[in-house]
Amino acid sequence: MKVFLASSRESIATMRKVALWVEKAGHTPIEWDSPEAFIAGEYTFARIIEVSRNVDAAIFVFGKDDKTWYRTSVIHQPRDNVLVEYGLFAGAIGPDRVLICQHSQIKIPTDLEGILNVNISEGTDHDAFARVSNWLNFIAAKKERHIHSTYSDDFVEIVADNRHVLDPEYRKNKYNAEKVDILGMALSSALSELSSDNEDELLNRVLFNNAQVRLMFLSPRCQYINQRAIEDGDSVSDLKNMLKTSVINSVEIFKRFSTLYTQQKELGKIKPAAVGFLEIRITDFCPHFTMYRVDDILLWGIYSAATRGDHSAVLRVKKSHDALFRQLMNHFEKLWLVGRIDRHTDDSFIVKCHSRLPPVLNKQLVAQILENDFEKVEKVLSE
Image 1: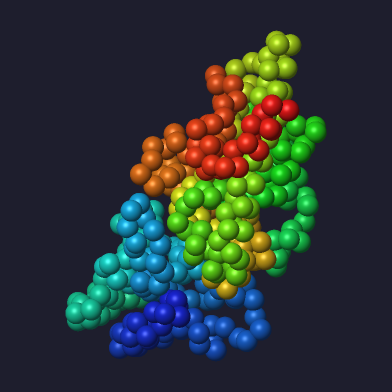
Image 2: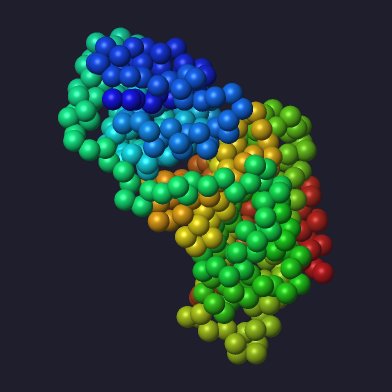
């Protein structure tokens, strides 16, 4: 069997060890940095998709690659691109043919709890080799390689090499959608667009067409900002100011939405059954991806340490390709629910409105975030 192996650069020595186990078990390892896997100049994601169609199994090493903050503690977690690649292979060849080899001291997403994994911490080599060999023999005994029932050439499609040049039609799709979920570092474009839309197109869809809209970006006070500023080559103060601008734009959206709601209610046009949902939240946790979900299509891109998020490639996955779509949406849902460190979820919203609740602004949270800049909010609300 051909067995693909992947890891971060920091965990490559561990991957080499696991590759030797694969050879000893009588199979052919294809390591991610081998010429067979990647050729210089090829686009990484496109090649990953192609490789996933031509191997029988895959092993991913989840090492202690990155430090991040979880609640009040610093923890280790695997590199984000390794997590993404795991999802790609699980969707392509089936989760039973994809194995995680992980260090016991790392934190992995709760969505992957109970998934096939082997502990490869120090002192576990003998047992780990036996478990990997048994798994490989089990896979080899299967007569046919599993192919995802809806897997096709457009399982994951690269729709832009740079998010800045993303075709405007993808941005416009949200104005015809029933469900819109957007996650990003600051959501500068989306929030600015909504706060200055004189037609109130999306807000009207929430009020009269049951549209459900959730927007989430980083809190200007979260600890992850320090790490992201270093990776992007920005100053911490510049990044915080950008996020504060997003908070102010959210207040402007509230003002616009509140005015629209009041006007339409006075005209007797607000029908609770037709009112959807709009909420803007902040999170204290590393987002890992940009996500732009419109109904059954999800556009996403990775925040890497080497590239700014708004200069990264954008990929598209459809809901019909259930494994990856579900994994990405579960990631969004988890961040949406955990919200802020040591805070109740309800403390995470800046603006919210639903069928039986008119637009509400969390002025206490906004005041805490903006501190000396809160007078800008007062000015917006008084205009």
